[in-house]
Image (cartoon, rainbow, N blue to C red; front, side, top):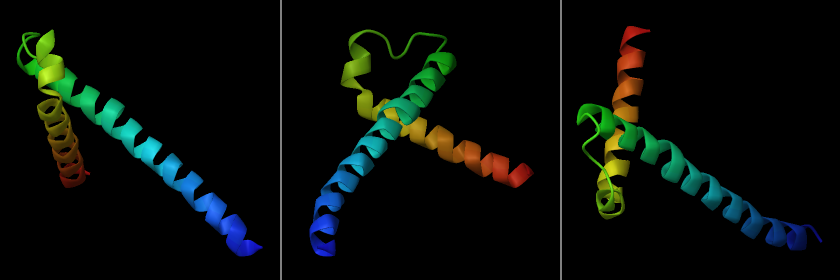
Length: 77
């Protein structure tokens, strides 16, 4: 009986995990990267079609900004 319950719960937990990881990547990292690029370029990049075309670059920028922020905070705290 426990094996049946465990077998039914694993896919649900995997789905929840996927949704959380996707939400973190899509919302947090993406928007940090986009806002950083908009501030650094004074609102010139990314705009319009560039947002869709350079989504990977925006996410990489957001990831780097978050990592560097954590490193700087840990150095000074």
